[in-house]
Amino acid sequence: MDKSYKDAAHAVTAGVRLLRESAPDTVKAFAALAAAATAPKSLDTKTKELMAVAIGIAVHCEGCVAYHTRAALRAGATRDEVVETVALAVYMGGGPSIVFGGDALRAFDEFAAAQ
Image 1: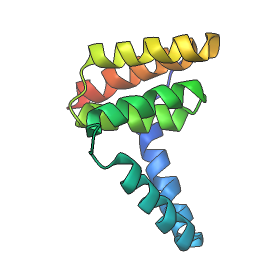
Image 2: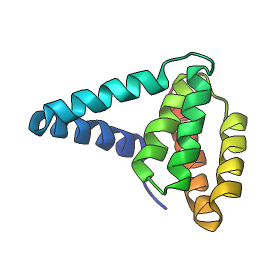
Image 3: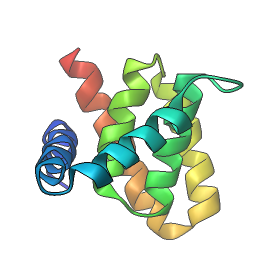
């Protein structure tokens, strides 16, 4: 696949911005949910972002894979941690997760190279 994960992550953010203009209450409520779910408590931010990458792979959400892989890198995740996350997602999600797992690794490499 020939795509830019930077562009995909940007498209997620731009889409949320567009939705915020049309349905501000919905986006405000979603943002509050996101803040509560991702706040570091017993699990740190990096762990939660790696979990989000695995879930994005398992539910076949390209934008989720891009957005949360970038967030995992920013939270200090290493490529090896992303590889283990992908392996777990493949185990839980079967064949389609292999495709999205490869996407997560390509996304990590693209974001890491840009840092």
